[in-house]
Image 1 (cartoon, rainbow, N blue to C red):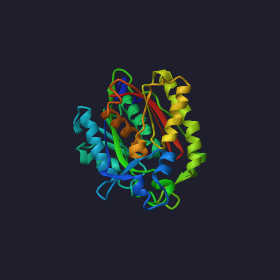
Image 2 (cartoon, rainbow, N blue to C red; image 1 turned 90 degrees about the vertical axis):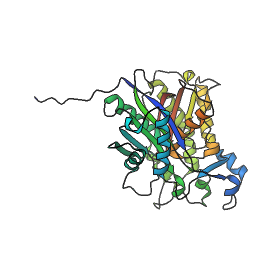
Image 3 (cartoon, helix red, strand yellow; image 1 turned 180 degrees about the vertical axis):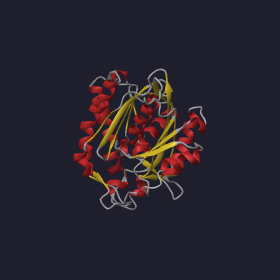
Image 4 (cartoon, rainbow, N blue to C red; image 1 turned 30 degrees about the vertical axis):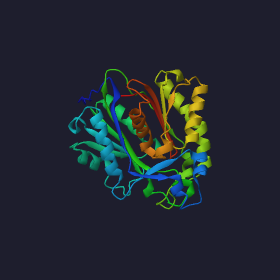
Length: 324
């Protein structure tokens, strides 16, 4: 009988480096109040956002992914030739073909890379990170560049108060590579397809969401997913140094942190609050928040971070990682 030879991968995987980018244009709540019925206090009370970044015509899913990905490779101490696979998590490319990953790989200088896009909306980075980790451990890839890149201003009605105050543009990236010791834990993921209509693009152009329904779901269902990710990794809530939920809404972030502390997470657990100055950048929000926290000295190499993404689908995923 003919035997098929299988690839042999690494014992474990870890994040080797991270990077991010945002457009230059800062949009304040006061600026939004000039084009819609809202004001700074109303926005801060409901979603916690003070400002966000909007891209111009030169800022695209691909261009932002290239910049964030290049920074992550540099932070890893690697060169583009050391990377063999690129995954771009996104839900805002304006056309389905060609995919972003092949373009991003070529522009960064990663030649003949395996490359694909992944759409799990705001859970996309966690889905892509889990996929990259498994690929490295299975031997399908050696080092994987994982990018979340979104230009949500392309798919938001600029005068729709329910979405235009929340969503913004940017990209975050991580390089995943082999490790002797586990640096990325098992993923806890799933979907709630019965709630798919709560976040949709009904006209094919603009995002629509039932804000209250999504808020109720996220504040009740996501903390248990985070706890499940800890259980799969063999850790306790008290082991978590950094909590990085998807930056959907500051009230949701605070609710998740509160529930984890009720289950034993430490009071000094650092909680990502990038939503305040970056808005909701969907699949880019988790790696971008991590990179901003690293730059600000709020997280350090070796810290235990609990990541959890959630959004349209409805899709969710979480895992424990060791900060690079």
